[in-house]
Length: 196
Picture 1 (cartoon, rainbow, N blue to C red):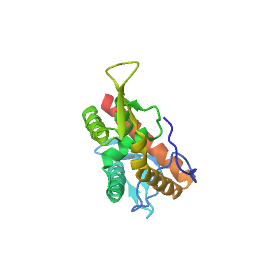
Picture 2 (tube, helix red, strand yellow; picture 1 turned 90 degrees about the vertical axis):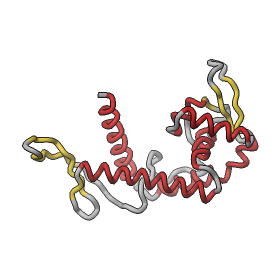
Picture 3 (cartoon, rainbow, N blue to C red; picture 1 turned 45 degrees about the vertical axis):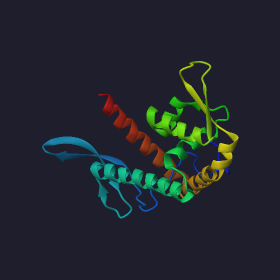
């Protein structure tokens, strides 16, 4: 599913601002370190002040960055007078004129089926979305924005996307590429650990 923005991004399209309050620049270089009589490979991270960041510190900073992002989106939604979860669902549907399944919305928004179902019911009660049975699987609901829903949500969605582009433009293409690479590696390694 592609995402449309009101203007073209000024830098790396995959870049996302993680934290405006911390400007840590991490440089990864592998090295071996003796810990508890065992030799393990750790990543040496250097922050903008030249200090070394151990994996435990990096993991903590990563979580703080994700919280910063979540807080920023929540504050944005509050400023716009909308519910954050509803904003995520409407944004997921925005570029899908034919609609998409509730299962797809769950994946796009990283929300559970019951949560998405409840949000879609609230939005449908306000004529923001309309649901229909899937032609492929009648048990699956396809949700789509109504014309009224697009009008009601145009300002929050367009403004959010403008701010996302502004945040992305504050990051150089090189930083954006490194950010995406690091986050994907972090997620992949974590997921592999979960599956073991």
